[in-house]
Image 1 (cartoon, rainbow, N blue to C red):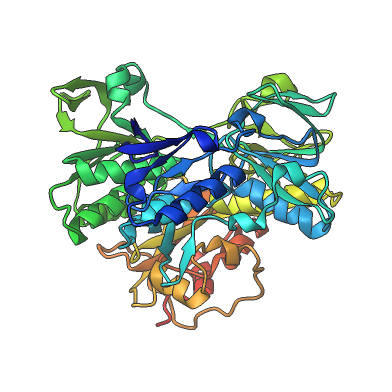
Image 2: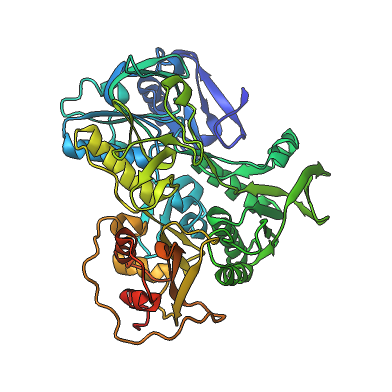
Length: 560
C-alpha cells in the first residue's frame, strides 16, 4: 500500500503484516536489510513497541504492541513533588529537591513534547553550527569550542512516570505532551487536559510564558499567521531553520534581545554559507537596536554592528497592517513605507503564562504580570512559583518579574530547596546576557532601562574581550551557570587612572551604570566578563557614588 509516514511527509511502500497486529513498515527504508533481519526486527519492534528509524530522513515509524495505544499511557495518580512546566526553572527545582531529599519522587508535567532543555542556544549557538543535521541532533559547539546538547540531561537520567511510585530510590519523571488545565488547591490535586487527575504534597508552578504577537498580525487572518513565527520552543527553531533555507526574505519584527540575536544569526549565516540569496530584515519602533535597554549612543553602535552582519535594519517602524498578496507578505508601516517579505518572525516580548490563576485562586500582579509570591517564592500553602511566571519582591529594587535564564536557574533552585523545608528568602540579583555572535556580547544585572540616566566608562578591547574568549577561559558556555555560584570579595581595583567619560565611535569594552535617585540600580558589562559578582555587590550595597569613574576601576577594564 502507499501511505505518508513519519515527519518527512514522503510516501513510502508499506508492508502490512497480519502476523504482527497489522503493523506497517516502510519497505524502501529496509532495502539493505536481509529477509531474516527484517522479520526479526519487525517481531521485536511489535513485541516491545520500539520505534524504527528511517535512515534516509530520520523520521520514526512507531509499530505498536497489540495492547498499546496512545490513550493507555499510565499517569501517576500521586506525586509528592509535582512540577508544572518543563523548562529551566522546573529542572533546577527537581535537582535541588533531589539534592536535599535523595529519595524524593518528582514528577514534571510539560505540554511540550521534549525533555527539559535550555532555551538560550535556540537564538544563539545553534544558528552558528556547521552541522547540517543540527535541527535533529540539537547538539552545538559553544563559543569555547566544546560540544554539548541543548538538553540538560539525556533520557537515561529520568525514570518512567509509571515507575515513579515504586522506585526504591525515587527519581525524576517527565510527563511530556500533557497540560495542567485546572488546580484544586484545597484538594492538593490538578487535572490534565485529558481529565486525568494527579494529587500532590508540594507543587511548583513554572509555566514560563508565551510569545506575544502583534494585534495587526493576529487580525490579518490564517494566511498571514501561517507565514509568521512566534519564536520560543525547539519546534520554532526547527521551523525557522527550514524557512531560512527556502525563503528569499525573512523579516524580524522587534529590536530587543531575541530579535537582535536572531537577526545577527540569520545575517551571519547568509554571509558564511551559500544562502547568499536570503534577505534578512529587522524592523522595530525604536531609533536603534536594543533601544529600550541601551543608551542611545550604544544602541546606534549596535545597530551598525547588526547591519555589518548583513541585516537590513528599518528603524522607527510602526506596523499598520499586514496582508498576503501573490504568496508574499506585505507589511504596511504607519509612515507609508511598504516592506515585502516571505516570512515574519514576531519577537515582541513574552506574556507570563498565568492560565492556572483562576482555578487555583492565585493572585496575578496587575503591573508586571505573573503570580505574586512572597520572599520565599510561595504563592499559597504548598504552592511555589519560579522562573518567568513569578512576580517577586526584590528588597533592593522593589517588586519585579524577570524573564532570563539565570533567574530561572536560581529561582527554580531556591523554590526546590524551600519545597523541602529550607524557608530561604530570594535575595539573588539575577543576571542575563546577550551575544551578537561570538565577538560582541554583554552581561547585565538589575534594572537596565534606557529611560534612566546612565554613565558609561569604556576602554579599548583586546582579543580576550569577546564572548568566545570568555567561555574559553571559564570553560562554560551558559555563562550564568558559573556566575551564580560566585560571591564578590574585596576586588583589587586597576591602578591605571581612568580618563574622563567620553563616548567615542568604537565601544570595545566598558561598564554602563544605570541610576535612579543617584543610586546604581543596573549595570551592563559590555564585552567585560567574569565580573558579575562585583556588579551584584554594587547594586546590593545601594550606596550613592560621587564618582562612577572610581567605581569602574573595580572592573579592571583598562587591564590588557
